[in-house]
Length: 459
Figure (tube, rainbow, N blue to C red):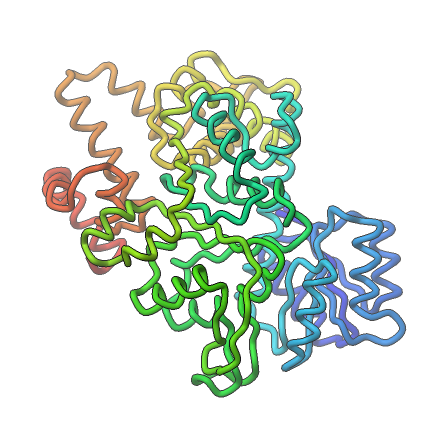
């Protein structure tokens, strides 16, 4: 089953076919058009999740395609392909509603990353629409779903601060929905028509992250063959969401403090001071207060970003929301696997096991569990045996002596947390609310040290 549908528009045969081949290898359904007129015909006949289109084409340009999509197919995202060094054209593309832009020569990883982001955004949008219908929630909180009292409190905070310029810090374990909350704040504010720009700070090394945020000028470092605008400039008039802010190095923290406090910065290697008009939202799954005490996170930056804290509760503290989310994921993956979502149900015992499970991976893990169950289910009802082994093991532990069951459960919880944090001990210890020394001893006791070395190579 393909993960999404994409239209590639370019009058250069080699670029067009190369891009199509790359995206098909990622399991997308891909169509191609050699120019703007053919793209218009394709758009009228088919529904696409995203259109990758060159800007400079005869007769009908990429901007013409963008305007057509914005007018007639608002659910479709457009990524414009710009020529080498056309930085002003890229800025114009974002301002006219393009989802993103890429510069020639095209880099495979950039194309794949953008396609994944679009498909994830579409999935979340469909999920939100379904859950809004089930919950009867107000559309203004469409970006997050829940009936738990902690979630309702978060809705109240969003309503109070959305239309202000206040900086927000969102904390919580991985997979709890921090990005959804950031989007809810943005789309409930007066900046809703401006861009929402997300940056995962932990996904890039320091040098690339600085360039990604602030941009750079030609020749500022090896590989900087042209000027590049950063995410801060792209977010002008909107919101920038900095996830995993805890990974910022001390040197970068200094520049971030100035950008947040003074609303100005310079591109890497540049001298021109650029003024910011953005709303800052940050997120972390670390305890920043602990990092401040350890000296790895600046105290002045912490107090600057922690103006309005929002803590996302883990799934184990929102047990009442599990049936609703489970039903949604059941519906979604039943359709993807050619099963009738109106017939397929979850057995009461299986639902009970899901409610009893700790869900160290939170909503993300719940989604994966339902996908597995839908695929493995042979009849019209999902049973305990159709669920992943981690949940099934919870049922098996009830038959063990208490001491043995507790030891087994502790090992599974620690191993699950380590995997979620890429086998890094400090974030795992923070997630489990124990110190690193205790974590190390328990890893040794449960035979997890060897697995950690194999998985990460260092620690």
